[in-house]
Length: 282
Image (cartoon, rainbow, N blue to C red):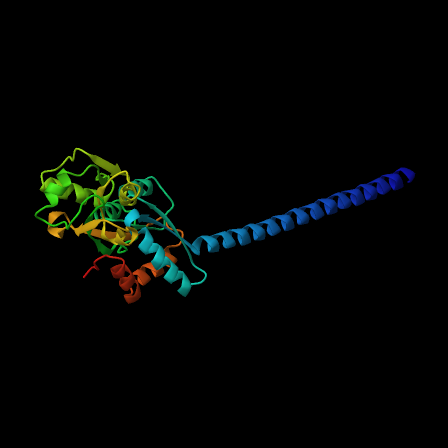
């Protein structure tokens, strides 16, 4: 009888210890699950804020010639949309095209030609039906060394006598390609005293700083020159500079970017583009 009582007592003690053990384990498990829930909520909140921040910023790759105009357009747009921010990155059209093909995180691309946007469309890298023509560019000859007017009858002679002639790189810059086409028409390609910029902005800078006395620039750059002679090249002398823009498929702000594209097509935006020295698409 005594042995039975001792055995019963030991079983009760073991049962109590067993319950206490699993009670502690259950408490630890509840704490662990609760911690996971809290972490998940924090992560979700952080991700939501990050996504919202990304969607409120539009990053645009823009050809050098159009950057001042697009900055002006962006300022007008941001005045109407206070929570929206637009970040511009400029270079030659061909350089930006290569960066996009290599995965650069742009939302949109404003090129100085139609070739690269069409190639991106063919590669499936843009949103369907997002390719638009926003402007037609014009080429101008600017010289700080010529006296008297420049016209079709004396331009070849003037260019032959140029000490240094600045153009943008024809391989990457559409305005540089247009300049090459003009020189080829005049049987002056390659010019013996050529100074080549990475883009049309640098071609302008070479003349401004005296590294070249004459050069081909975009009509939209005329407000940035202070003296010298200019002549607008006849558009029949070079292939049309049709400037197109696209929304890229990898965009993290595609809805906001589409909204900005709608603004670019508005009457107000078109008036700004025309005033900057571009022809408008029909």
